[in-house]
Length: 429
Image 1 (tube, rainbow, N blue to C red):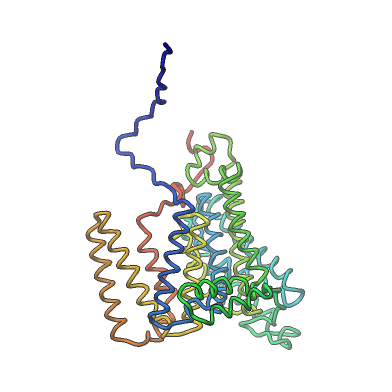
Image 2 (cartoon, rainbow, N blue to C red):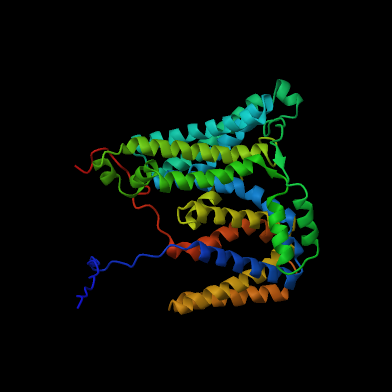
């Protein structure tokens, strides 16, 4: 006879009283399923409403161009806040980036203009770091001050450098710079034209997919590709390297990080400087890719929308990229197509709110389920009794989408624990 032995499972540590169960991260398969469902829903709305511009290559290309500066601003906020420093000054750092790119770009070339834009943003980030990290000033107060300072400084410098001499002869004035040369873009030959032909048939789902892919490979700026690389690089640096682990520990528990030998001040300074550089790059993108000039008021609140995209993405690059894409899509929609296509989005919004109501009812959140259902009913009535959306509302579409998305995603958010808190070296002793 042979003795049989049964392996005993390893002991499981008991949960602390009142501890919440850990949330499982979304798998790649689930994310792909959500993306596929969104595409099917968007295609169905296009067919029902006849708004063929919803998934056209031009719409997607414009959305990508508008999403890049928002995404870079959100990425800048992610670097700063992961190290525990709230950066409300992103808008001001983007303004500095637009001015630096416009000022240096027209005198030399757009590549040096981009470097100047990044450098100007870094200066803004370092100023924010000195004020908040070294002197312990409230992060919100410092950020607002940087926004006001950047606006005032660039307006003053623009009057000096763009309103006289050679700059004025080449089209400069107190509110804009002379033109900057274009950044190269590329189109995949053959494939782009083929996808455009398929998209022109307006087939359900197939034409929509062709339009989306076509927009992603037609007249894409080199700087857009670089921005995409920065998202992957950020994910790898912050979540796959010792440097990223130490930096994120400064945003979660700086006292514990200090006890393990981490120079918290250095990591906070590095993170906020990188944050400023990324925001400056977003501003430089605006001055060199879509418009080729520095223009007063060019950022248009994109620094704040970038912060909203970062919050929507739960302080992670993947979610941030989706949020920036959503805001860029809504912005492109109102700029390119006006009230009729935005009107088609009302039907899409009704479907999403109904799905949200069903999900909340399933999760036993009855008040939120009823609220979502009521709002869906009101929007459906609006859709049925009108043929277009008023122009005033069309212009506010990106900001309405921002507020709506934040309100719907607020319950699943988890910011870094020490984000915005004052820290002093040795305070845990």
